Length: 470
Length: 107
Image 1 (tube, one colour):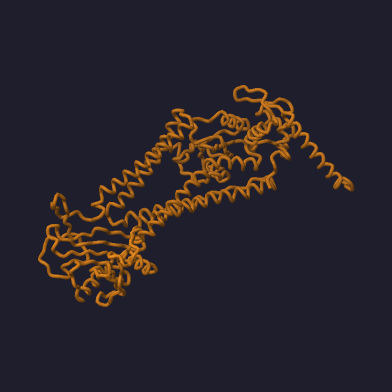
Image 2 (image 1 turned 90 degrees about the vertical axis):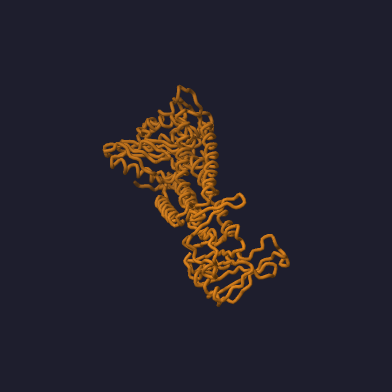
C-alpha cells in the first residue's frame, strides 16, 4: 500500500470552505495534506481521524519566495500557539490543521479575513485571470479577423474550430472565476457587516472538469479528422511540447527556490525563461510546419521527380474525382494528378486538386478545381456567398473600369446540373473559370483559356463534382 | 457601507487593546483575552496577527521589545484614547438600555 498519493486540485483560489471540507474528508479517510504545488497536492497516509483544517491567506507571501519570510514564520508561530500546525503552503495560501476537539479558529473576524483574501487575490489569482481573459479576447479577435478574411479556410478545419472553441471556453472560465469571486465578495462583506459571520465560498470544479473534458474530446476529434496528413501530428506534438515546457518552467522556478535565490530574481528569471522558451517553441513549430509542407499538402508521396531549369519537380498520381481524361481524349502520359489540399470540419470540408503537365509540355491542357461540401444545411448559402467573394475579388482595385477588374456573371446552370452557375469575367472578358452551386457542394473549376466547353463536358463535370463528398 | 476603520471597535479589538494597557508579548494576548473574559471572548491567532499589524500602522500601539521573533507591545496615547472612546460608547449604550428596559422591568 502506498504511503503518499497525489491529486489534482481544482478549487478556486478563494474557496476556503470548500478546501477545508475536502481536506477534512480526506483526513477522515486516512490522508493528510503535506504539500501543494503546480503539479497537484500530495497527501500522506495517516490513521483515519477527525482533523480540523483552516485555510489562511498571507498577502505578503509570493510563489517565488525561496523560504517563508520572517513575518510568515511569526504568523505560523502564532497559529502553533493555539494548536494549529502547518500542513502545507503555496504562495499566499497556508493550510493548517488542528487535532483538538473544538479549537479556536485562526480567523475570528470575517471582515478582516475577507480583506486578507482580497489582498492575496489581487496579486495572484485575479491578476492571472485578468491576463488570461485579455489574451483570450485578443485571440478571439484574431480568430474573428481570420474568419472574416478567409472564412472557408478557417471553417473547413476542425483544428481551427477547436482553437476558437478553446478561447471561448477560456473566456467562460475567466468570467466564472472572476465573476464568482466578486459576487461572493460583495455578499460576504454585506453579511459580515450585518451579522459578523463568514459566507461560505464555492469553486467551479464541475465547470473546470466539463471544460477540460470538452477540450480533450474536441482535440482528439480534430487530430483524428485532420485527414491523416502531418497537421494533426504537429498539433499533438505542439500540445505535448507546451505541457513539457510548462513543467520545465515550473521546475526551473522551483530549482531557483531550492537554491535560495531571492523572490525578485526568481520572478524575473522565470519570466525571461518563459518568454524566450515560448518564442523558441513557436519558432520550432513554424519550422516543423514549413519543413513538412510537402507531406502536409499531399497525402501521398510523389511517384517520381524530374529536373527542370535547376528545380526538382514532382509527379503525383493521387486519386482525384475529375481528370482531363473524363473530358477529352489525350495521348499525353506525363500528367501529375495531385490532391494538394484536403481539410474537414464539422461544418464543411474542402479539397483542392489539379492535373498539370510537366513543365516541358505546357502546351498540354491543364485542369484545377476545388470542391466544398457543406455539412451544415443552414450554412449552405453562407459558403456559397464566401466562395463567390473569393471567386471574383478586387482587393486594391477600386475602379470597375480597371482592366483587371473581376466580376462573376451568372450563366445557365442547367448544363452543369447545378442550382446556380457563375463565370468569371476579367476586365469585361469571360474567362474559363466557373463557380457552380449544387445542393451541398460549391465547386470552382478552371480550364485552359482557349477551351470551349461542350454541354456533354459540363454534364460530366456536374456528375463527377456536383455530388462528390469532399 | 463598510465601517470606517476603528471608528468603533469590535469586541476582539477592544480586548486586545485592553491587554496592551501593560507591556505584553503579542502571542501572550491569545491566552490573556480568554482568561480576562472567562472564556467568553477568544481572538484567533490569524486575526490577532493582523490586528497587531493594523494597530501598529494606526499608531495605536508601539513595539517595546524585539527578541528574535518575539515582540512586545504597549498602548500609545492614541490607542488609550480610542479605548476610552469605546468605553464611553459602551457606557452610553448601557444607559440607553437601562432607560428603555430597566424601568418597569419587574423581573
